[in-house]
Image (cartoon, rainbow, N blue to C red; front, side, top):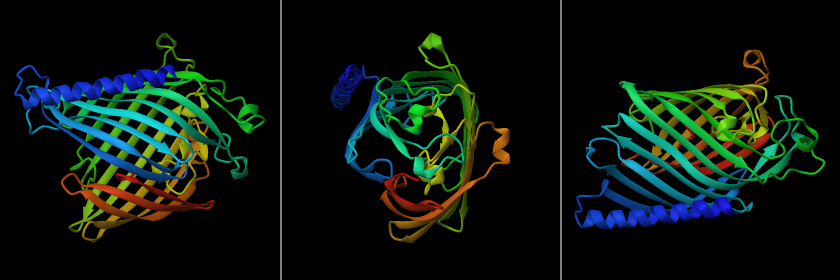
Length: 366
């Protein structure tokens, strides 16, 4: 409770600071560190298999830091609060700050979550009938300070923090009986290098270009980590316009971590890349997955999508190239809620050999 109190106080402080900044801007103050501040608020509704129905609200503040030109990308701070019909709580504050004509970027998130996750065991051969859930309450911090060194190419340092201090697992279940690291609470505190290359023509609905991000992180007990492990991720996305308004989108993901990885930081299938597979249905220390999606207009603000994916998880990365793969696919409907930025509401139905799942949320899966 102390963690959530601190985050709520911080959120209220930021909202109050934003109001003061807006007042100063309106008065033409020369001392403000931001300019052209615009604050908006929206209701939020969503549905995913792991949350069921969720609802809440989000506030977004867009602005330029002092001395930044309006032709550059604006900085932003969001503050969201959601509650689900499964009694889950999500309090989150993602932010992006841009300086020196976007040469410097500070990206991250502060949050507090009360959440339920699925656990079926570890490995691509885990059984569906072994499904159980565990409850976890934790504060979260994500930080990345990036600088461009070539056009569209950024490199910097990143930090991850999750404090799983209230982990509740099923008594007598497979998680309690297993020897996976992390089943008795623990703290993730990882630091490392982040790089990315981005030529997309739009962040919310790319029609051309590519995005490649690589992360190499290691935990550190100096920073309060409970576990000693390392991990890397390579997330590559490609977008190609077909005709005037149709788009082919592809996403290839590769990740691996060392043996002492806590079970709640394992790689898994059932993410946005592999819609149709239950969340965290298969998890292990390595993942190789890919998805191909065809996006097309229907009429007016409505559009559609057809997608298919294949992926696997394995103990080592070498095994991923010869392991059994899990396939999924589905269809979806899109509705444009912001024509200027291309923001869409997304409703998808995905299927795998074990059944189907419905998803309703905002923004494209990748």
